[in-house]
Image 1 (cartoon, rainbow, N blue to C red):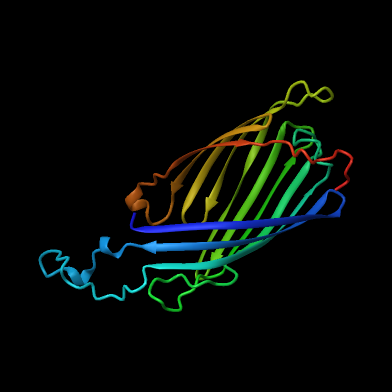
Image 2 (cartoon, helix red, strand yellow):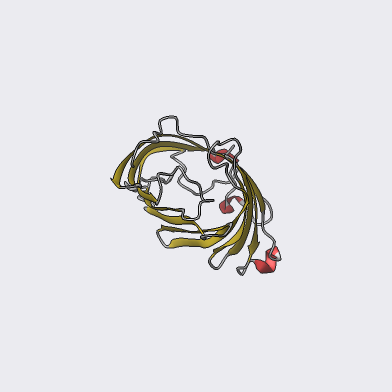
Amino acid sequence: IYLKTTSGSVSTAYHVGIARYQKLGLGLQGTFVSRSVDYSQFQWGSQYNGSAYDPNLLPGENLSQSAISYFDVNAGLVYTFNNTANLIKVTSNNFKQGTIGLAFHHLNRPRYSFMGNEDRLYVKMVAHANMIFSLKNTPLALQPGALFYKQGPSEELVMGGLIRYELLPDSKYTGFYKGAGLYGGAYVRLKDVVIFSAMLEFSNYTFGVSYDMNTSHLTAASGGRGGMEFSLKIVSRNPYFKKTAIF
């Protein structure tokens, strides 16, 4: 391993009810990062003698610093809302739930260079929004979403959505059996890829599969081919949740 990174983080979050079935959350995170590099494993352009690599030639680089460490600060806000006490799932005809969040990483812009210069990490902004709402008197629900990153001169936007079809409703009173649903849809990362996604949901478990198809100038090399991904989500009930709470 020529480059090693070790980090440890401490995170805290606080959520407060601002209206009926609406919450605002604030999160803070502090991270300590330690990085090291083994220059003896590197090859430099100045070590080629015109015909072959010669490790006896000097690299011609300032290699005095092989380890660095820094402290990193991140923070974010998230707003959540729904039109019930969150006891009714999306299979109900009048269900709406949404989340809007904004986070900033590297707020203190730490130095990260091994060369001892003033290079600093750009502040990274991440904004996201998603919602799920049922279509009244149908077994369908829509789940649109968007995600935006910006760090220095680089930025990325992903947007799209899924359609949920109810395969099996929850048992209304007894809770003897749990509902099931099938999701399908696509997301677009602008000027880059189209991501096709499908999920099967049963009770608190969701199994998903997705495939991204390249649409950028890299198509000439990739032939439009992307990568297949599989996911498994397990949601457990909050043991501190109280049905009588209004927020």
